[in-house]
Length: 272
Ligand SMILES: Nc1ncnc2c1ncn2[C@@H]1O[C@H](COP(=O)(O)OP(=O)(O)O)[C@@H](O)[C@H]1O
Ligand SMILES: [Mg+2]
Image (cartoon, rainbow, N blue to C red; front, side):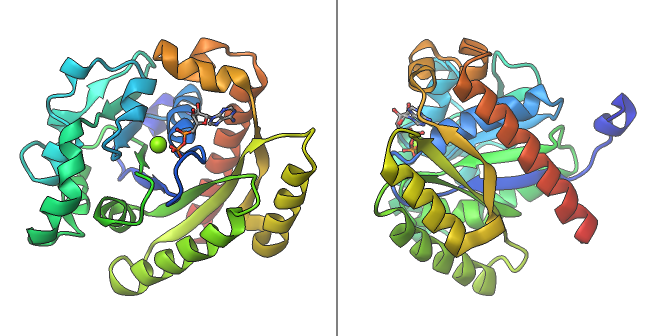
């Protein structure tokens, strides 16, 4: 893409990274897909919507730099522009999370437009948005925080760990997406399902992958993220794996995934 085209102000596409299960690779995918997209010269914002703040930690954002956070954005105390801070990755910013966010799930219940808080913040921001993509890292539940992400998003990206119960949770998640589409956000799409922590030596991984592809067909990305120790080491250095060890299989997989996601984005845009 030419510099001219990439600097035009267009509404960013918003992808929510969702799965109500913990430990399936949501944060790892948010951090590393965002980094890989930035490496493809996209301007990216990550919104850390998990009170645990793992995405913020994964980018090495110190606690004291998390004053204006996603909680402040949700309650309307800060704009996205005020809360976004630079990461060490060129072209990649983050709205960090702080433990304040853990109260939000309950506080939001009493607020007006409680499902629309994030969407409203994003819409206010869009005219001046310097981003091509906003990736939202969701907490492991289908509560109000995740609902805010689903209402703000254009599309959902689901990381799925290759384990026995993977499909069970996925059906529930897809029903939730359908409910949100009917009631709150009619244009919500499913960008895709990414198989994570795939272990070639484990028959179960192969079997789950085949099952998921059997059920969901082309919704499942061809790129599979392997189980890779470098991916799990990188966050303790506050670095995305692509920065920590560019050549490792995990980094290469996330670069492949970014290219596949961006190709799919192009065909969704062409079809619209
Ligand atoms: N492909 C992978 N290979 C090895 N470890 C991984 C991989 N993906 C994630 N992990 C590790 O698994 C754990 C859970 O991943 P995480 O992304 O935090 O899941 P979630 O955000 O869904 O709770 C983390 O310790 C992470 O480092
Ligand atoms: Mg997480």
